[in-house]
Length: 236
Image (cartoon, rainbow, N blue to C red; front, side, top):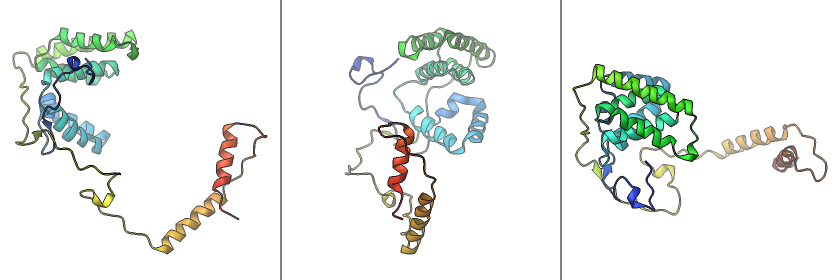
């Protein structure tokens, strides 16, 4: 289930496979959530509009829409992670999507067992049992609502958006904000503004209450905090 750069035999794909980079988002989000796409988008937007848009346009629109790994396998991977994270509601939906993309209940169960078998995960047996029950419920839902109509795993992406991007020009440090696309440089503050901020800061630090200094040789956290406050006090 895990790939390591040091062992190519464990990797899902060879090195430098073209992926979805830029352009309008692919339609993986719609393929996964099908008839409940609008409902899922509304719930994500209510929780965090910025994160919701990132999930739709980048997580699904770029990463999930990239070729190389079929949606069936992607759903097996995400279901194993959702089971470990004890997220039954999300597991239910993604298990249904996995079944629609051609996975079987046995494959979903094996994905969960493989994930929790990793020693460092230390998943409680009750969480595993709950995940397996969710998978069974997902299969019932799939048979009732989707059986006989397999979903397409062909993601639609804009022409030219699947590529290997070139290495961006290297710099010796982080780019300045003014050099970044779509940003506006902050105006340089006037000397009077800088002095005003400095005076307010000095007054705030000077007004900070003194903490009794610990006895000599003490290494308490309070002693360290007191030394920091004293070192930051401006000359009186």
